[in-house]
Image 1 (tube, rainbow, N blue to C red):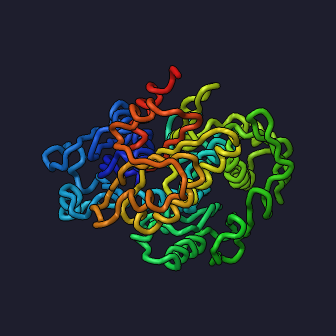
Image 2: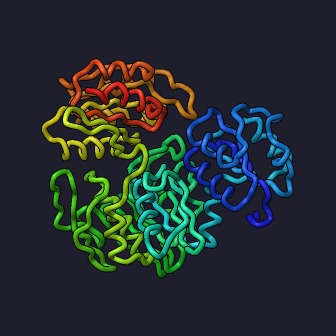
Image 3: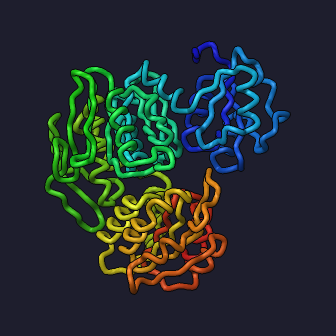
Length: 458
């Protein structure tokens, strides 16, 4: 595949957050971009305004003629699309060059310096923060993000001079094995995607192989204490980080009037008085990892200090929608038990005396089956839990697997109930609330604006 000779790129699953960033990249290069997605969304609407040709029915007759030349068209697909998809089958039978999104991103890391963020959780915030630090500096970067940056209202950043490319390294379907990072952070290796890996040991082996792909004389920055023995090439520098321990860590943490400050301790040079633009406690650790990558990239101490304070976060990641003297409402993408624990704990630190209500939509039947007890344990840190039905995504139902598995294992005495997602806004409007968090990676976010409208006049 040669990007320079390609004229057209066709995306199957173009509306995904990662796919849409890649589609935007090719649009910026003057290529013809089109694709299929199951349903329209804000992302697909924006892509269409930018020039992409998109349809929403798996129908060969709807593929524009611009994308039917086998010599000049690249097909990109997401692993979430079933192998029986009619359009994907057609392109395979006709001999088109077909790649996963991760393969195309991997090609960029062969020619550029990839700053990648991997791990079970924290990837999107850490990679978006890293991109912001570089973009706001003289270094610059290209960035393919797994969320919409609030600073730039996009999931793609472009530079006409930087050799650095920031990438969220996704372990799902072993996609990150296509990358060859110059430097990478690994945030966590807690079990996930066992429908792909089968066992925790195989999951860890996936990360171990990923570390072997780091370029010679590159950098690995691991969360201190994670369950991983890396397999790096000679010359790769290995560092650790965490909130208060490791080669990179925080010192002198201060929480003052809802703001968080700390000093950044680093083998590449300490930086005093860092202020978090998004003052959530877990962002101390996310920020440490991002600043480590930024220092490796050559960003100066003063550039880092200013950019950390101006970082505004990512849509659906600790995303405050409403904050006044009567109620606090935020949405968060957390969909793994550890992420949920971190989310609720961070909010509890900010609001120790207030009642915390969580509305949670489980994501995937397999993940619910594998971790329902851990979900219940994490959700039990809240004062009230409202459970929605499981969001199936790419999966078919599994007999006996429902939100009730989580419900039945919540701690004794906690307030708990079920609710249909379509009725959530009205249900919440009728309840006494102090702090409300909506959690999940499914379509619960589609109802956030309704909830906001219901609560804003309290």
